[in-house]
Length: 265
Image 1 (cartoon, rainbow, N blue to C red):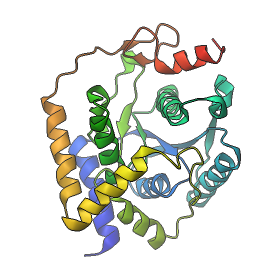
Image 2: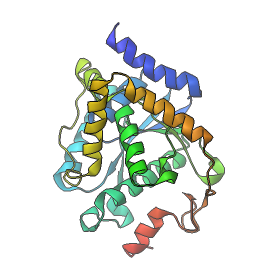
Image 3: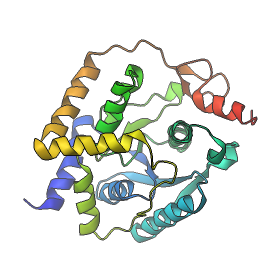
Image 4: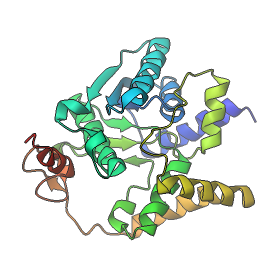
């Protein structure tokens, strides 16, 4: 089978199953997956708005931003840039850097998509990422965050919530790499200096080892997690943050709590 046809078919299956259409904000990290997702999405009839979140991580963020700009130049798009420091948050001073980073990115991606009247925000999360996230939350007994194991989640304009779209959801790490190589897509090979000892790295290696021993088990896990999510009932109601007005499970969202911690609100 032609690999590119196979790759695009996996994305098409997500688009068709969930009826994805319209205006999409594409989050570019500079890494291979988001670059592959953006490149592939240009072959669909979407209105795409690429953006990059500058986390201010020394030379790493600068290098990633340059690659994000490069792919936009190649594909004929203008890159929009969001700077975390404009919100008063400095990752270098955070104790739990990965946690703060994740909270900030989720908030800013949604905010950008909502403010640009986008139907969805698309990310480069692939099958390997999705399963690593799920198993990490299971290992942490974090069942609420275990939800979201679907490639597409609907938005809610009343709650200032854009839909979420993971076009690479049914594609593994090595398949995304193959697509990048085949299409000669530039990407940043540097790794985040804050994530070198992250527990998710070991989890992802374990998942890939299982796939090597039993081909297809990753996709079966993903399908099982989707079914489990459909059976779950959400205990907490989503409301609007009393400070910024964006979605929150509590009276104040995690991002505003971070800003308050840094003395910016």
